[in-house]
Image 1 (cartoon, rainbow, N blue to C red):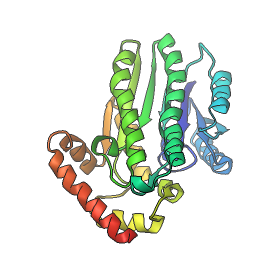
Image 2: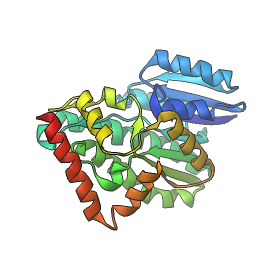
Image 3: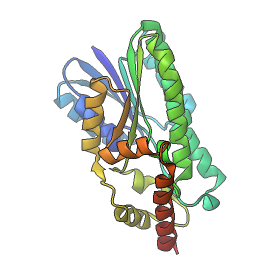
Image 4: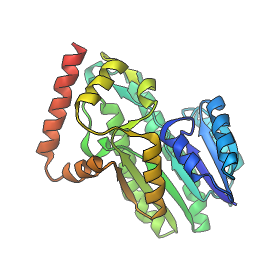
Length: 269
């Protein structure tokens, strides 16, 4: 039976990825904080013919995560595919961000996926097969004023991918990096806000002119492109263009960033 692990499966892209991967011959480990939502997802997964196991965990609790990983996937029992999609976000200018905010984002968006990635990577490398999908962000390519800690951690994840993918390929392990633009998920509602609010942030995003896609559409594109073997995945189309543009014509990205910051300061005033 094919073994698949999805973190961040309680909602958003992770939930939709798990739904679309569910089929006979597979077992999915559904990892997230909200046990009730995970139970509902497990019912959907099982209705689609796959087996499901609910794993309610706080990914900031590294000891609890280590216990789960070592008990469920000990040495010699690797997973086939791992989708690391759990993340948190925050909005506000850096001058208003607290030290504890940086640690919260660092532990959740960078240390946690690295912990999970390393555990599964070692098992996959020993077996000579496996696939690990890291969910990053367009902001890793471009930066994002008013979301600096988030962009920084996603850039860190991209740096891990850029380096480890070559080691993995020689051992039979494939790494994928997913860098979405704006996706309609609960991450905005659960985000921390400093000198701004959820309502102000969503109004600002709505004025920028970039398409906001659904989590279902994002997951569908991710699953399809991972299945085709694409390593670097951006979505939707404008995200691919901006990721390509950022290192070549940074002055255009600068203009977009100034526009974001000017609008942010007007709405926050």
